[in-house]
Image (tube, rainbow, N blue to C red; front, side):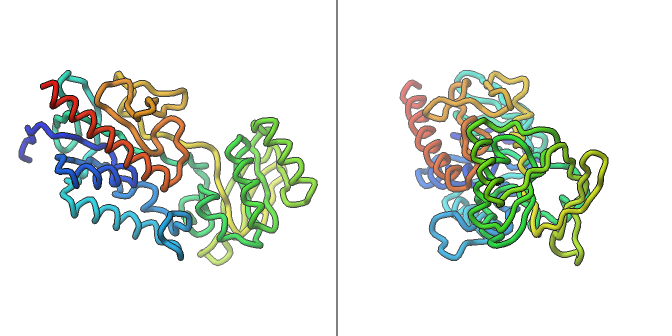
Length: 317
């Protein structure tokens, strides 16, 4: 492997919708841009079966196809996408050092972290097997597919209750499966009580989700649960899991970049992190909304802020 000793204008860590959008903006202005991706180009969007709420596609679009379009557009303007995992970022004053597993140590004037987040998994049988075939992690993305159907929502925090309430717009009934007790805010619990009284949601407390099952081996047909020592299978057409997000920030653990209590990156209103010249956008950023459209918007904003930063650095030099 040939050593890359060039001082790049910007290195983007991650190649999901946010970074790819940022790369479209930077490369169109002849800003030397390298993207480093350890997994799949397109991130979670590429593994989403169908995206119905991204602007510009009246009939919706396959997640993989959307990711491919974003990748092709960024490459059209000269984005350099490499498959490599980043292990460390160091501030060297005039530039940043980005250590990788496959590309050695790279240098850049600015860095954009857009590594996204992964959904926390239940880790039960059937969850991985039926992902996209009845198992989902985004009600906004996939709820409309369950119009007049019965689904299970797993979780007891704000996200689970909020998403369950959202799903009542489409579904005929929802089983909210809570491992212990509800942890949602009082306001959300009041709304949940109203839905329970209306007969649209049934809450199952102290209930573990043990297995997601299918009668035909193709689509989800039920969830095996245990409550107070009693096992049963609840028939459902789909399962929505809301037990939290895990930001992909493990490589920042010992860095000077400040994270919030759950490990997401804190930024200023300019999307700059606590390390000057290092920016963050998309689902990895503290306060992000975990939507493709907003991640793309933040990518565009980050690119413009990076351009301003590069201009200030070049002027100072």
